[in-house]
Image (cartoon, rainbow, N blue to C red; front, side, top):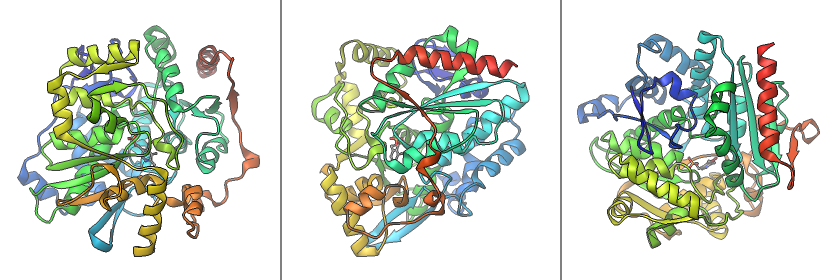
Length: 474
Ligand SMILES: Cc1ncc(COP(=O)(O)O)c(C=O)c1O
């Protein structure tokens, strides 16, 4: 499958090369040139499949078997998804008043990132071993992606991971899940930044230095990585099949959003022909609400909320969404993104704005709504939801700003376990949810470096990458 850049350049590369590419030379993100179409008959055939079986059907639509044979793809998927705490990696909880919740947090780090990350690191490892090469993945995290990248890479040789998070801006357990991993190929930086957006900007400068990136074999496991987006398509298809009474009827997927990677995957599933309504629900960082209201993309300040993994002011994957909705018009997307990056603000063209409006519904939930929703869900079901999941459930309950759910069958994505976000559970006055995955985390074992204000972060990061390269050649 050939790929294109969201900024217009056709890049004739393989899945393998895409796996190791963060940004293209024109500064864009990779997208496949064609998106496969799924017929109603195929959807009907898929209806009875488990999630793991569905992953094995959908991934080969995007990954050529000349690059990885079908048998090897299936083995890698099995190796990835067998690390989950339940047999099918995810499950649906059906609750009072038709509330459906897709629990996506049964992996190593209790967040939905493990679904795609586990497969991505298996694919990365496959090619690193095959080529006998080394790779450094730089990961910026609002809390969950970092630990998922690290945990899903433990024991994989030829791979170093550098993780950066905004110091004291993420939940304590999220931090401990990263800082307590003791492995020589994992490097964690706590950055004196207002949010992960600042670190995003810093690494973008490195990722777009193509000479440096090539010389040091640097890429990312963030959702710039196409493989993450690709694997995430599957859980939307699965959610659809498990929610629709009849294949072909529309179903709303209600998604807690941050960097819009998950939304991009959902939009691709829709483009493949799955009749999905896409409902994006943010916390107070309500980027999409603002875009729908004003038609303008703005560099807003980020707010700290009870749902910290969604504390993202500018979602990097919105670029992919614009590309998908503009009919793959790289020229327009390039113009929009360049204007936004230079002036901090840009107005979307009217026809593109109409597309955004007709495709994405948007809502947001403040901290008080998050707490009320956690409490109501517990009262009605004795069921814990995390503060991120609560934004989606709040929309289903009709408590959000902006769109309020009504009508269609719907399913809310539960993107993390409440066990990982005890701050919100305590605030809601509920008993704590426990998990053996976090019971033993101990602050005394924490290992990380600080990047303080005034330090030259760019220089420190580059030096670190150079020393990893030197080490890997020994
Ligand atoms: C628990 C949780 N919910 C929601 C999100 C938002 O997902 P996305 O960045 O794909 O929009 C994240 C991402 O960091 C997350 O960790």
